[in-house]
Length: 87
Image 1 (cartoon, one colour):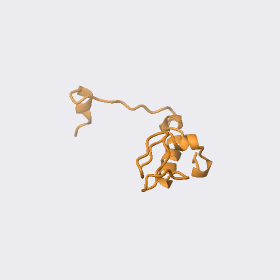
Image 2 (tube, one colour):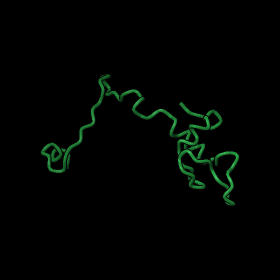
Image 3 (spheres, helix red, strand yellow):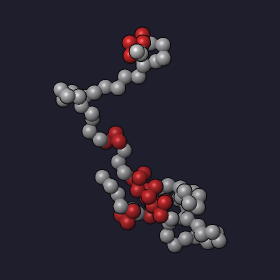
Image 4 (cartoon, one colour):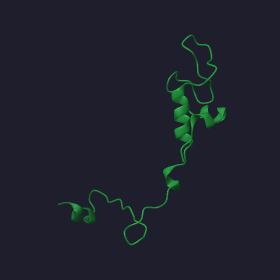
């Protein structure tokens, strides 16, 4: 799902810091003169759109050729199982 910047609410936009003027979360963007901007910077809107998008955990689980879910296994550096994968 892609969120367009025009569809974001003011609250959603202000939920991320501004990368352009360094305005904090919840604070309005500022001009170089220090006055408040009437609209947030474009980069802040884009950052907010990325933050609003659903996380990757909502995506369907990866499956192997047999249709069964795949598993990711973390091996420690000294495990005997890891030695089998070194070639």
